[in-house]
Image 1 (cartoon, rainbow, N blue to C red):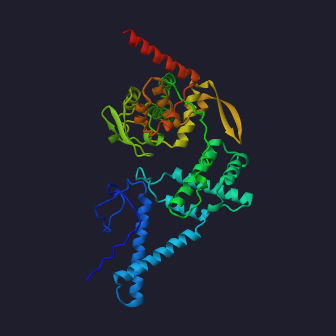
Image 2 (image 1 turned 120 degrees about the vertical axis):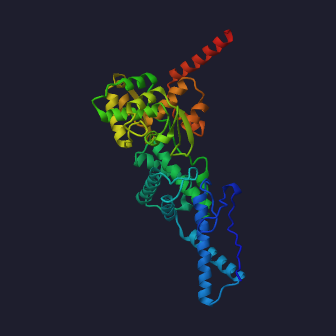
Image 3 (image 1 turned 45 degrees about the horizontal axis):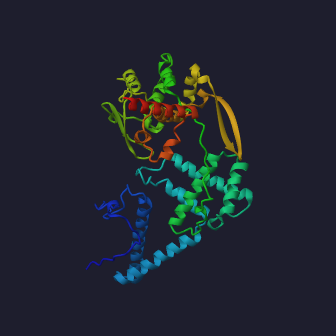
Length: 408
């Protein structure tokens, strides 16, 4: 007679996040839409594997199948031993190594897609710098040593000795906090000093440029008929400028994403569905490439090459030879540099130009966010690159519009 062991995993999940349909493996799992599904499903796999091993061990040792109570006791012991071993033997560096290994096969909790290679590179680089800090300072860095004094010493090391800018320092601290949060949630770390408000992620507004509508129009009119390479890059860039899509999205629009007067797709980075009306400039580009490619748009190109070629195009435009002053905080000091505007153009300039031009045109930020896929005003506002004078002109136009409406 078959016997069934009901064993509590000590895990909780809402019914809407649980896959009720049995898989080929004959058991259910957390849905990919559930933010913590990779870790939870791995833990369930681990418990099942441990239970099977415990069962086989008992049969081998006793030449009979265990009673339910016997299997329960054996499973309790094995899980407890594994948990204690994990908690006592894994130090911070060992945990980060495991974290990065898991990241290579983990899915984004919000999109269900594998983590981007760029994200894994950020993890790997942050780990390398942390190990370099421990080596050069000849100190032990572990869960119990992460406190405010460590924070001040480490950020000083990043800024002074590594020469990192504030945003880079902030990225390293943010990544370290991601490691520590995960270890804390798993019960491996009990030191929560890193949650202090003083253990903050440094950041400063970037000096990125955008192209206004007049500059975009001049770029569109630029005669590149004798240079197919630059024509292709110019067209792709303008698709980004008039759609607001990220490079990874406007560089990979499929025929099925073009639905009548709209571009409709799910963004690769966040998994957000967006629909954007096709601007007249994009229509003209599509007419130019119609019949040459399935989506009537230029073929994809690498980010590195596109950034290089965009500067070639910008150099041909007299209006982009204006001098732009940028500043960055490095090692606690503000460093001011001057560059030609075309030298600062990159693929991400397209998305910034889209958001900024719509904002200047008076479209409500919440409406722009629906198109760009931003989830918070704070994240969205980092894309708005207007000067104080431009912002004053927007306010002036708003007042004049109100006055004319009142007069009518």
